[in-house]
Length: 313
Ligand code: ADP
Ligand code: MG
Image (cartoon, rainbow, N blue to C red; front, side):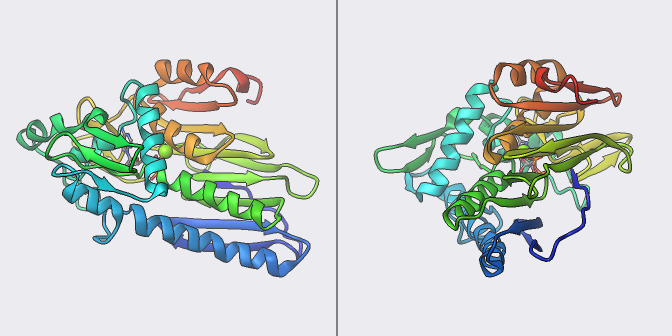
């Protein structure tokens, strides 16, 4: 995804930062410039808070604790993490397991920067741990338990959307009516650009200079998943960061998926889901969900649009 440039009035506050391993971008307007500036800072704080809670790489995070111990005994967790886990399981059910945060039981064996992937033996000994039904949530005491050893989870397919939604909630509390927040490929917009819609350009995954669609948006979230984010190529095969939970190998039936919807946690989870499901099942799922639309670029570079977007080309 990219955000098309526009001319900033003095009143718009724009802030870029790095958090959760990606670029965070905020554009916010308020009559009181100080409130807009405070909000842009708040976005960075929220991103960092979610990262401290949900990063698998930070040893003190709740997520790292679960990955170490939840197969031995139930672990009580914060309501933030509980909510994201519950929503993840909802998407696993909805997608018949295409979205599955236990993908990480195999996913952790990949290192895209160093072109490392699991061999057949390693794959075979870890694949059984991939199954969202291995995660047991107890709403009585907000605890989580793993039914099997070797289960690992990772929230890379949903946590950025969650953090973007938290930012928008905060903006509403501060009385802000015009803001865009994006964390890597996950964005959400509140209101418009003072009388005009925001216009978001969706890039072609293969010819990155080409914009495949320009979509005017007001009060909407948007997420893109692509096979060009984190990957390496070996013998003409692309190994990238979205795995098919059935095989533990990268999903290869599409190149990119963009989802539009009311909130970013849902569009984030759905972009990853539809990427795994592929064009046919993916479009079918999108057409069954109210207020959700999507654009798929398949392996050949063909564009597929969900029902509500047929006219935008
Ligand atoms: P990004 O914005 O990081 O490119 P995506 O929304 O495209 O994120 O999701 C990709 C991330 O989702 C991966 O980096 C990984 O953490 C996680 N993931 C990969 N495969 C799956 C899957 N089958 N189900 C749930 N999460 C996944
Ligand atoms: Mg996603």
